[in-house]
Length: 132
Image 1 (cartoon, rainbow, N blue to C red):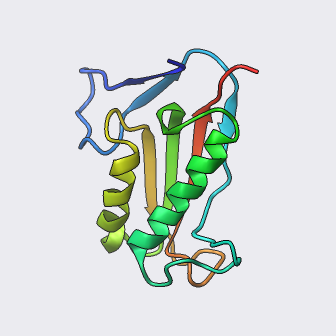
Image 2 (image 1 turned 135 degrees about the vertical axis):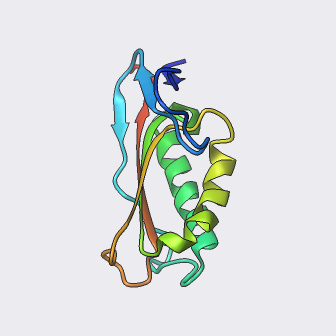
Image 3 (image 1 turned 45 degrees about the horizontal axis):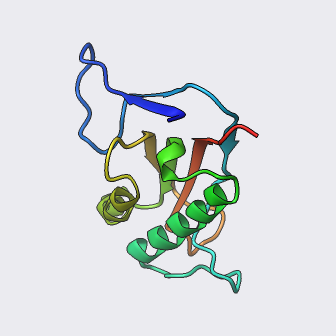
């Protein structure tokens, strides 16, 4: 495994939705740009629907990782920007399916708006890729 998740007992425990540390032992890193829920038509898929937009984004991220021989198990950090923090549980329900065990390090912040007016969230990840 290229990534080891760690939650040392010397710091307060997490809430289970993220880990404190991701240690990368080998291989190059992938830095994915922030993804929004663009469909094949170039429009936001799931306007007003946080769950649907989350699904679309995770699907895009999954395909980007796979294109480089990686998977969600290789994700070190996930950074999420949401336009309404009160709806973060809808996103979390989707995200938890992709990270059912040992979630990566994480930051989630509320922003006033994203670059597309129909985007409810934007997600970027850093992952460890297989050595070339």
